[in-house]
Length: 270
Image (cartoon, rainbow, N blue to C red):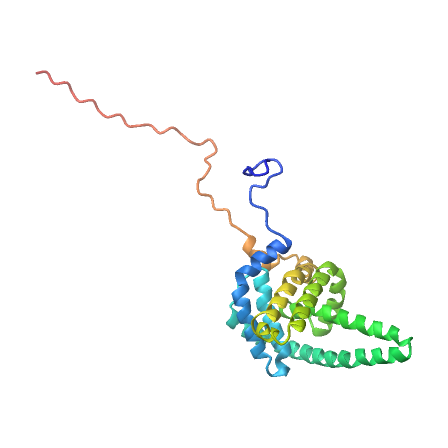
């Protein structure tokens, strides 16, 4: 195969173009939904104005972003509010847990830090607290995805999320890195970043999390359920195609077509 030559089907060359992967796939999929994701970001900000709706609103945004990241259809307004209503109970409880955790870590980390300055042994407690904070944060890459994608109870979702962080450690770390980078840019560009927050970061970060981490949820949580039941995952129904025969193979039954012979006109003698 030449460097600039045309690929022809043959040994080592697929008949169909290779599907893009990694950052190239992400760029392609995100590019198609970029403007819609800006609208989703604004819708999410409006719906969390009452702080108690933080959890259900996050479920709703996750449902829409999950579909778009997996190249499945989703109507931003209709699907958003449908997911908001269907997952309100679990989302509300998870939102309260998040609020309590944010307050707890916000108090614990500075407190342990101050104690560590006076008692060096307290640095161990500070490190443990920081580690718990990071793990709990990374669990959220999977928690809301499982809320909108499964019928599991919230305790099982939290348990699964804890293990998925390590089972999908590569995906989890890449998602964390993107969160850190975007968070740092917004923090250091404040107050100019206020205008960016309205349209960009929250839906983008949610989309990144869904793109990276939903395949882990599907592999370790959703697919085993269908495998145990001996059923096909309906998520892949769109890949099924029915082969419709256009021409029927007669298998040697063909017979030559005989042309009708036209009667000869009698000769006229003049």
